[in-house]
Amino acid sequence: MAVLGIMGFALALKHPVASGVLLIIVAFSLILIGVETIYKDMGVFGAIITLAGIFAFAGSKKKSTIKKK
Image (cartoon, rainbow, N blue to C red):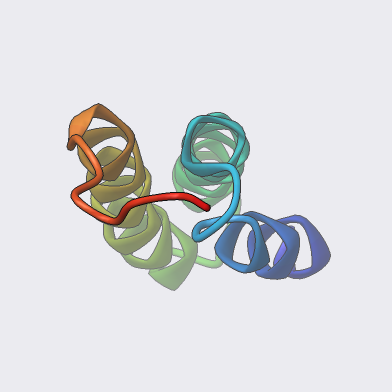
């Protein structure tokens, strides 16, 4: 999950929708791991990454004001 999370964060600037999808998948997996195993802190990390995924989706909706050459 850590590798997928790092890939999701790395995609945030160029491909925010792909980043959001990957982060939501990682967050869902971490929350399931936190509920099903003795590692309850994984659920907390899943909730934090869920926020990052939501922000990535919100960033994709924002219109760019930078002019492309």
